[in-house]
Length: 261
Length: 300
Picture 1 (cartoon, rainbow over the protein chains, first blue to last red):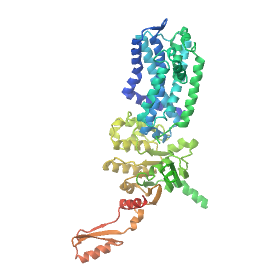
Picture 2 (picture 1 turned 30 degrees about the vertical axis):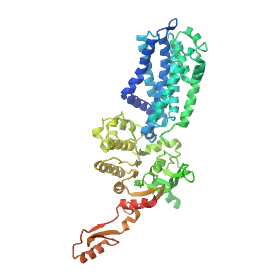
Picture 3 (picture 1 turned 135 degrees about the vertical axis):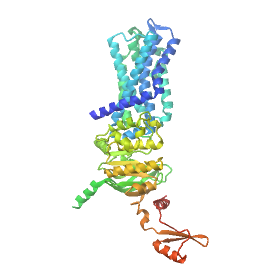
Picture 4 (picture 1 turned 45 degrees about the vertical axis):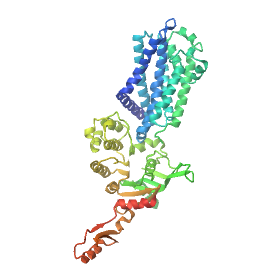
């Protein structure tokens, strides 16, 4: 067990190093949410409620999306590519445990996710007067949302990595799913103003719950009544994320492919 | 007593395969299945270099990947260092600590340097070699700090070999290791393989190059259509040692040819007939390649 963790940490460090060396993807991953914040923050200047700017609403959604981008999207694209390159097959032939591989992946996801969140919060605070979470209980919610959200996103990314037939096609399969979910889950628009069927559909998937959870962290509690359910639904968010984590883990264990054949 | 002897024999075999079959579903085949490996028996002794020869699609890689634990056989008995690679259970990491694998083609870790890759992989094993020594042994010292993406095809292959031997394997699998090497690099690679053999490593090699099999292998097995055609030493394969020699010469403006068991006698006979100098005399024996091509020509 110690050996598995030791090698998992080594892989995490190595994967982070490899990620940092791919300059284009670093810039894209870290800067893209900030660019979107500038666009949306500059277009929508109205307040959604007294003291709640659109930027404030949007940042909550972007942090939630960041969890999906760095976990689900990144892994569901990267793993099929590694399968094509023979990386995974080579690792399978060494004493390294598969669990160490997954630990490595979750480390690189966590590192990029934290970097993305910190940059987004800093830019929001400097340019858009973003309010930080106002109480320790909100910080606590923020923490468990990030932990559960990134675990959920990571296992679902690993589970989904068996779907694309090749590394080349992976991005074309994965990216549209993420973009559609972002629209449906109230990242780019105010969720309560979306059509009912869209809200229902989004409620199946974790992103909607992460987004709503992040709003409970970044928006005043008075805003809760403006949610579709008239509440932040913290308990339900916890339950649904946990269910997806269990489902994603089971699917990953059953379907993970070590080579293209 | 007999049991005891049999056990000794089993102990000294690094690999033993009995009646190995691997079938894949194939709608176009008459039986609905295609046999990639169709009843192979094979043993590789400890410390031996064994070369598996055969055309593309013969079943070489499938066989090797079953031994490495990447694929499960449809039927048959497989033992690798005493393990069943299809059912390793808790001994997966012990098994993989004792083997080394050089896969056919890989294209990974482009953003790491040679040294970073070799050092990192060394940490997976309980008894690794010194990464610097391995880098020297495969001839990548000058490229140690270079990114993997900047390596040539042959250099990449040498890195693959470095990663395959870093764990001090007892048994090394080499799947077409010298594809893309220039002749000089191939010679250097052969030297490296001999060093490993001298240190007691068992090596299972697949190759397209008959000179490579001849230079390295203690025994060769020829495989075609999933079946072993023959297992022998390179010198004896296909009755090569007892094959007739071919004596050719020019006479009356045409090329003449005689196949004989006793070329010396034939040459002496010709020599006396031509009164000394036989025009454009050649005496040849079939090369390993001639024998091999004849065998797989009959097998395909």
